[in-house]
Image (tube, rainbow, N blue to C red; front, side, top):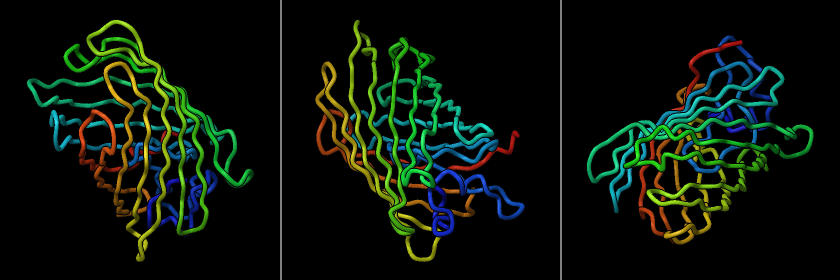
Amino acid sequence: MRAGPEDRAADARSQEPATVNRDSSPPAVNPGRPTVTDPASLTAPGWLEVESGIMKDLDRDRTFSTPFLFKLTSKNARLQYRLSFDGLVAPGQAGSAFGDTTAGLQYLFVPQSKGGVDVSGRVAVKIPTAPAFIGTRKVDFNALLLASRDFSPQLHCDANLGYSSLSRFQAPGTDQQLFASLSFTTPIKGGRWAYTNEVVYMSPVQGLRGQITTMHGLTYAVHRYDQYDVAFQWQLHGDGPVWQLLAGKTFFLGRLF
C-alpha cells in the first residue's frame, strides 16, 4: 500500500496493513499523489480519504487547476469507490470555471500478501460538468489495470496500463488512447520524507502527438494519516506544457463505518 513515508518501513504497501490500527489514531493514508501512476492497493476500509492539490503549467498556456479526489473502500477491503473533480480551472487565456467530474470503481483482485504483488482493476466515467470553453461537454470512459509491489522496505513500485475513449474538444468524434506508466518510491533516511519518480506514456490522439513525461517528487508525512507532496513534471515529448508544478495533501475526513 502507498502509505506515508514515516509508516513505510513498518507498513509495506500491501492491502492488509492499511486495515490494522495499532493505536487509537487513524491508519496510514494510501495516496496516489503526486504521480499520475496510482497504487493497486486500496485505502483503509471505512475511512473517507481525500487527495487535494494544485497544478500549474509553468509554460505554454499557464493553466492552473485545483483537483481533488474522494476515496472510500468497502468493509471487505476489495472495492473502492472514487469521486474526483478537476476543481477550479483557469486556462490562462481568459476566465475560469469548475471542471469535469469523474466517478470510478477500483477492485482489488489479488493482495500482495497472497500473490506477491497487488493487482487491481478500475473503470471510470467522466461526467461533463465543465463549461464548453474548458471541457468537451461529452461523456468519456476509462479502464485501468494496476499493479504494485514492495521489492524491499526501501523500494516500492507502481505500474498502470490503461485505455480511454475520449471525446474531442470543440470538435465531433472520439479518440482511443492508450496509457502506460511506471513509478518508483523510496524513503529518505529519517522516515518522514520519501522521493518518488515516474515515466508516463500516452498515445497520440487527433491533433496531438504522443506524450512522454517524467516526474520527480517529494512527500512528507506529518503523521502516517497526514501527508504532503510537491513535484515537477517534465514533458520529454509531446504538445503539452513542458513543465508543470504540483503540490497537495492527502488526509482522512473521518471514519464512516
